[in-house]
Length: 101
Image (tube, rainbow, N blue to C red):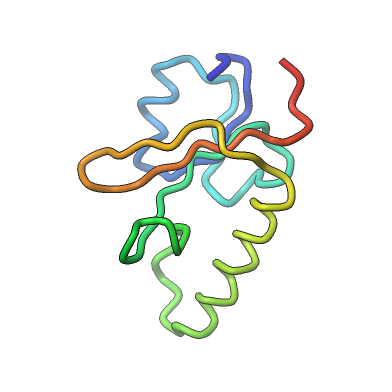
């Protein structure tokens, strides 16, 4: 990842990205659609079905609608830059489709 890139990611990955020297780090999904990169953790039987978002939404139906909407935006505006397995979890780094290096 370029050091001057803007990225949205999960809270627990922020310290490593900060140490790496990223210019701007937002709490995913904040910045989605604007930031050049997303680092998204996935849950589900094959670890690719449900993007990890805020955990405090108790209503499963509402949470499902939110994650489906988030994935729609990801699919529309981003392409897969890299897929990573880390401690048995699946992470995908997405790059904005119109990103210029």
